Each structure stands twice: as C-alpha cells, then as structure tokens.
Length: 89
Image (cartoon, rainbow, N blue to C red; front, side, top):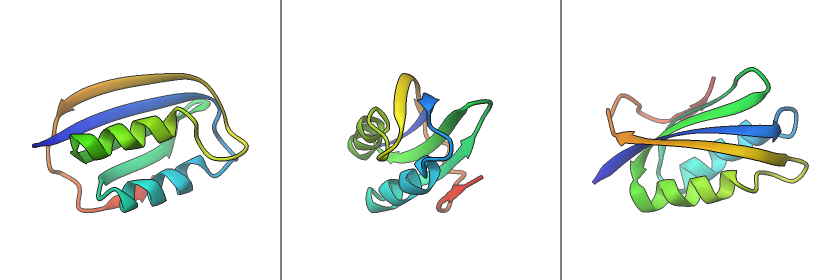
C-alpha cells in the first residue's frame, strides 16, 4: 500500500546538497514527490511504499556530509498519487 510522508528537516541543511542527495536517494528507493528549501529548512514530500519511505526518513535524520540535523518533523498521510517523479523545487 502506498503512503505519503512529509518531512521537514531543520539545522544546517541548506548549501550542503541536501535536496540533490535526497532526490537521488528517493529515486533509488522508487519514490516520487519533491524536495525544496523552506525558511531555513528543507521540506520533502514523498510517496511510495512505506518501507522505502522509512528508509528515506532514516537518511534524512543523518543527511549528506556537511549537514547538521537539529530537528526532524514527520507527518504520515495517505498517498494522493499526484506525482510522476521526484523533483527539486
């Protein structure tokens, strides 16, 4: 069953290729959605299999080299199937 996750990552997450690496990780996991910069944070909305979404979430708790994660907010929902691929916004 497909699910949807919204993840907001706070800390040193901009200027460290967080969105680019999140996109690569999501694509490897077969997820669709998007990653974008917010006001000092990165927001990720992804849909796919729950196991793959959990793997993305675990990656977000560490982030790419150079990132410092202070806080991660997570919200689970039902998938809307509105995305065709994973992109950076």
